[in-house]
Image 1 (cartoon, helix red, strand yellow):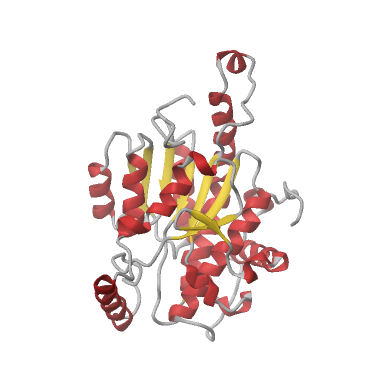
Image 2 (spheres, rainbow, N blue to C red):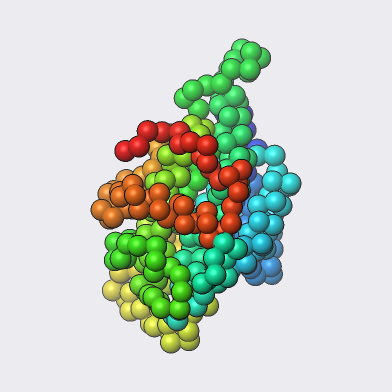
Length: 335
């Protein structure tokens, strides 16, 4: 493939990857891993100082930082606009940004009156919005990668290599999705889950979203999701209550002593694998743990639930058909 990709990574020089929520923790570790391939890495977060410091520290040149608050969907739109304006390709999108709220808080949404619980809004809705807004750029890059993969004769004739690696969407979920109670109604209104229950609900949404997305994306883009491990060293709970943050930190201390938690670098391994490994070329609509495809919770395979979440997300965000992947029909047959 044209660029610096090699046998160990499908990303390389000349390629572009966006990692959301990457100013610290798992996201920062993932950004470092992707930059090590030679790819240009776009760092996202709210902390400009931390983001710019990471960009300066990444190997290679051309990396950039983009600020966006995931509780503000206008800022998510601005992030997508900026990426499309600044780069003519996007080889990989790693949806890593997330939050853990100790108390139930609501975020206003363009298409609803009640508001959506903040953990779901940040971990799912903002991810849903950004992915849909960047889907055209990912698809165009997938086609471009196929053309670049072909030999000189194929490129001269404008032909694509059907075995080329597609563009990739990787969404960081969690095995806590297995504890969630299915149903989109819990996401709206003052009454409903909070804390770990809300977080589990948002991670279930990540998996349902990935499976529906994989069916709707064109052939030049794949979508996978993963469990990153348990890493209390991340800033996941920084926006929650002080008690929740203290509990998370204490869990980290005990976990490190007992070997039950992972470092941020260890937690970034599966996401990095899905973003770069030739082994998963063409793999889509799968859930991974420890760099292996595993079966997710049975509730995630409910096609009605996948469709219902997708439709609700479009409605909550007030999206037009032109902004939604596969609005004119799904690519793959129903499973």
